[in-house]
Image (cartoon, rainbow, N blue to C red; front, side):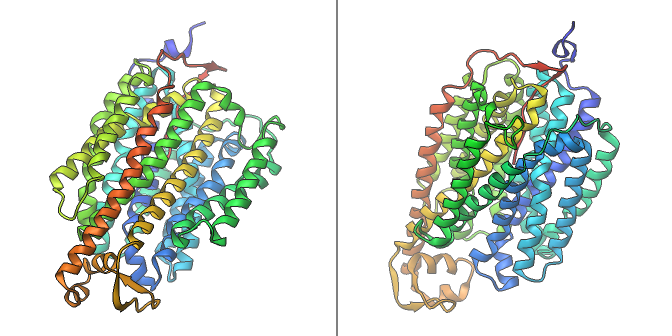
Length: 522
């Protein structure tokens, strides 16, 4: 019998590209939303009279919703069919975006962001499950190259678009921009995707859901509260983390008993999936955690506007666009264990520059370093994901993507919280300005804090001596540099699990005439 791998053409045909367009639209919409909202946080503080800790929950609530709904995606895809569920996720995300634009309090905005997250959590796993079944195992790398480039438009264009929309219109358009994209994606999905033929539904693991979804949400709530509280000793941090951790541990032991658990940890018996998962988790903690602080450095230390900060981050995305097509072609021919370590070294080389940042570090040097990091990014993420799920059967694809999505969300949240706490603690060591207190809470003001505030408030700058401002900014720059050292070391540590990635050609697995393939995640 001729296998599908043999029958599949080497190039991506029109049918596959047509379906790829659906996934690209959904991906751009969800990724744009994350990056656009990240630059709007200071605006939310002003508009709603809220603290930074309060507006940060517009991001945290979205993440918690993702963690809650992702475990359900694999079962729901089998039960209702991928096309129906994907269109439902698009509709929920679009409605959530519309409601966000109508919020008149920070509480409402956080609530509507949770609704968005319930839809956004299903978009990527479902979209890529549809794609992998259409493309075949021999075209995985080429597929990742085609899909990866437009998906990078989110991280590149998000901060720029967000800054521009806020400058020329209002914060409402940060969410309204999703409406035309969502409507187009819905129509396109209805036209391009094949009619569902869902398999007989497996029994739903209610007991597993009662342990895993609340456990993940509780654990991530505690982790996300860490930057606000500043210490693991705070009840708001350790108690949710303890309860969530116990629930997740209980689920781990339980999950090997039912025939169809909510999250199939038996997949980790696959060595390639396990090694790739560990590599991806360590990398996500390092890069996502410290990477989110790059724009903060431009905003707080260099005094750039949100639009300019977004433009300064663009070289990273451009670098990834250069190498991603090359990495896609190589992933089909060369084992990822031979390419990923070199890509990680590029990221580490770019990271090193940021460990040396000051108050006047050359933008040419910084943008060049971001470009080099982007080159490494393009050769890291997609190949690791390809290795993770290439040898899984068709039935295991949705389950495997769910597993990777959850682990990536946890790693990203842990990395973000860890880097934020390190930076905050570094800044808190700055000398206090005698007799100066914060009008909002009556607490003493540090030199670094005053210097950062003065960057966007000329009145503060006029009240303080120039040498104090210079000293405070230098301290802030050193604090960022120390934090970036942690990210640099963790990036080098990623080389350890990466060494165990496959160094010999992998054979794609076929089951029931349909091959498996990797899933792209947030």
